Length: 327
Length: 312
Image 1 (cartoon, rainbow over the protein chains, first blue to last red):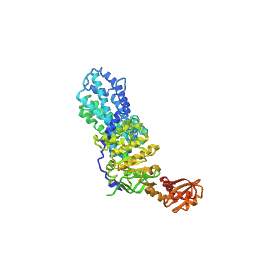
Image 2: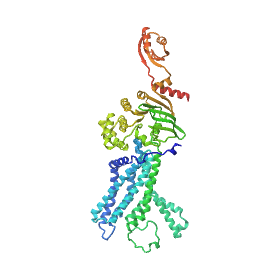
Image 3: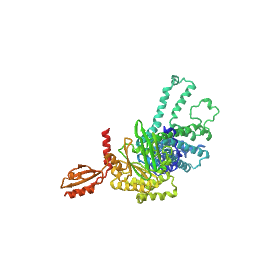
């Protein structure tokens, strides 16, 4: 066949810049982005405002007071700012990506754009990076608003290490958004109808948000030995059991994001898995880890998120390369 | 050095076991308007997409301006303008913004972009609505904007897929005028259509597609001779004498067939209009109409597919 000998010429990134710039400016000026941003800010304010008013009344000394803005849930609103983000980032990402390819197809612009001297690679990657940049801008803006509100209301500046942890948290949040963005773009490549791709992306999101946490214990129990169920299992067996459960849990990007956030914003976190008595020997309870150690702790989670983003994007890329452009 | 801008040899496209394009040979010459005709699903659009490297080729070869669209799609797409069937633009952007995006993709130097866009829009008479959103454009204006894109690109070949479908007669007329304008600029134009009478008026050569094959190829007159038989048909309307007998007596006349009340269709091997008029008038008949029946592509097309159906 001809295909085996055919090696195409020219850089796959020809035209990446213009596609990126167009997508970026389209997103930033679109009404959809306004709505999504309002939604995200509303959720952020809802969670940050009560925790800020409560933190103002904290009298005991806390070296990581600033990070508590992100993680503390007040008595009035039962979830924290990071939990709200874990919920709204996927929505934002899906909103940006669900019609990126099939929207072009339906507007009949796809074949016209592809008849310009660019490869499909540049189009898909440009769209992904444009939406990711939009997401990043939105999250940075939100992060700065929260930081500013914290400065004003708490009246103390954050320490350097707190800022460093905050920036790392921002990076994790963007990677988490990237996974969902890639997923929604995958559906926009697979389905010709934008409504279908939006529904599928939202369905997957709801699945990981609600169904997956319910399924995992059930699946794990099904694999459990009788010893395990009656509580007579050895330590090794119990450990293997728990590890199996966390392995399944961590297939969900939500879990990875949640764990990475805990590790970064709660410096006291020493482990994300089970810990046995002997490992606690010599540890000072409640003492924070240095930033580097916290980063090391959640490194697998960060890698997992980025790897997930790349794998899903690659799937979208492969399908898009094989798709017929004709109507 | 050949003067062909597109050369296809045994070009093949398979969708599963179905042969969408079945080993066609096709040459498009520099500066001509070439029409791809045929019913929907005959393989016209697939052929076009293969030439642009937008769909994979299952077999055979095609060269566009000396480049292979499979291996060098960027070189091909840099030099070829494509107006897809029912072209779409970004509705939320103005005509200028749409063309600026294309110009950036084409890597046209920034200092030239503004001038080239305005020149292109002037050539399709859209210069006065350049800053209106494309969502306010009519279908004909969108097609013209598509032509403007090709002009801005300074393409050597323009490939237009069903450019006149869905246009009103006036818009069609304007669009065909612009296609002729492309030819005057030295652009080779390849257009596909099923609107035959319109295409007939602009095409230098046509190819008739049927089930993935090129059934016929050549100028309209050549095709007519091939399908309808050689000859020079005229229509005569007259009364008063035995017209049929009078017409049969003219030298060169092969056939006289009645065509409705007081009308005859005459097939001759040359133009016999002058002789027929003289004969009828001198015999005392009243000649009311004498028309040259140009072979119409429509007729060729209809007749060909009728015969193809009968043969099947």
